[in-house]
Length: 243
Image 1 (spheres, rainbow, N blue to C red):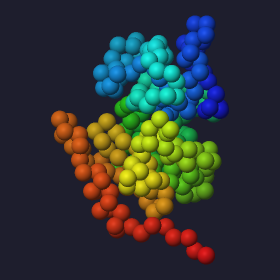
Image 2: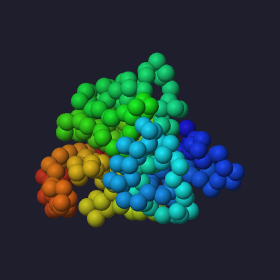
Image 3: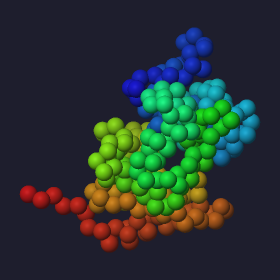
């Protein structure tokens, strides 16, 4: 699939000249689709429990509030749509919806604890309710640090996908393609972040992956991320290139 072409979302083709037809997969990955999504916990909760088991369809009905690719707005509705797109357009049809992520991603990297929740229609959410041990999340980070090639030499992700995933978005320097950025710490570093600020930090220059799953109280989600990372980085030298 070409991620820079209009995303295959049937609901956006039902109305003639619907401007949502111009939304690409890249825009949804970078949270710049322009569709309505206010906050994240309330619309996600409503989507999960009051969508007749079809979050992607509910998300696809959201109207535009900004021109696509002009405004960053954290939007798990885009994630739910991307999950449906991935399943509908995948190869390897010998695996059903439940087997496919395990056989194509989790098991090849030894991440046997990983699990993502499914809706009643058999589509995984993708934007919420993904689980795994800290070691398996570290494996996930290591896969990205190695450009999608696992330690046994097996390519899991397309060449260049990891670099794309960690590249900053033009609408928000602190966000990449479904990963976060922290340029004040390291321009190349990117990280995954969970609902309770569980993190997988990927440092390409240091060939380093750090997972942190300690969770702050719900009433106060902030913690000293910068201090933690700066102290950790003093323990690991940057990668050097031999002449």
